[in-house]
Length: 205
Image: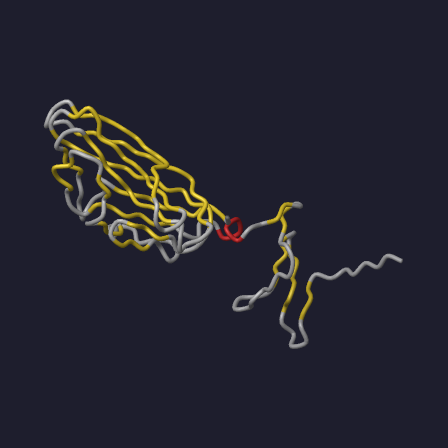
């Protein structure tokens, strides 16, 4: 036996609308209500994740706040990091940083990018490197980009990026390295982005 219930509005016992249909738009609940979905919320048969429904839940940007001078070998950028505070704050809880090590606020798939601006006498290479640890101890470079300078008046830029599956915020972390074969200055500023890093959570792990 098949039964069909035809209504435009369903109300609770207090007379409040629970479900309402008008002009092909279905409204569930009202302002101030909490809607609890038990099971899997789908879009045309495909499951919707939290990030899919709510968009970007974490986005953060940090920058070098002062010049890093006399770089002539590989170094970790372990000081003078600040969150971009000129026209932007963050989305979500944001990253935390200590001695150049960045900790993620939640698990998920992240897009991480690192951009450098450098100047100095002729250098065969300057580098932007992203280093990852999965055990909060040993790091390995997982993304690298290179440029060069031909004179002290040259300005060069390089950007590296990667997708990172953060399965454990206590162990999966990131830091940034620079390198050159001559005495190079990596530019920093507290008012503008010269050398910076972006972190965007794209979805669930």
